[in-house]
Each structure stands twice: as C-alpha cells, then as structure tokens.
Length: 107
Image (cartoon, rainbow, N blue to C red; front, side, top):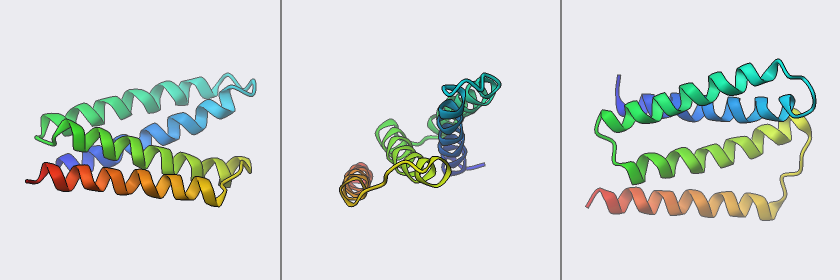
C-alpha cells in the first residue's frame, strides 16, 4: 500500500479515537477501548506512511490539519457542538498552510 493510504487510515483512526474520547468523557467508559484502538492505529499508520517515504512535515501537517477539520465536523454532526464561520475560516487557513508546506517540500 502507498504512504498516502496509510496516512488516510491514520487520519480516520485518529478522528474516530478523538470522537470516542468525547463519549468516554461523559461516563461511558467502554469507549476508552475505541479511543485506545483508534490512537494505536493512527500512530501505526503515521509511522508506516513515514517508513514508506513520506516526509515528516508533510505527513504530520496533513494528519493534524485533516484531524482538526474532520473532528470539528464530526463533533458538530454527532454532538451538536458549534461550528461557526470563524471556526470554518480557521480550518481553511490551516489547510492552506499545510498545502503550502506540501508544495514547498516538493521543491
């Protein structure tokens, strides 16, 4: 599998683990199993993407930015938490910054 596929798995697992953390924090302790599993898969996927040749700055930047964006959207969808225009602008700026890092790494 490609580094990009491992990075995608890492992002999805990290977001799943983080959203599960929200449930675990409300007293539903069984969700800590999903938190732990999600984070183990996330770090394993990130490490494997790096092992497959993806630069650290690019991999971590995409992982972090996608994680922030998808967690904010997921918390809105699943928990009814706010997602304001200012927050959406912030997410957009993070994503533009990561794109610039990736483009810069290609040179």
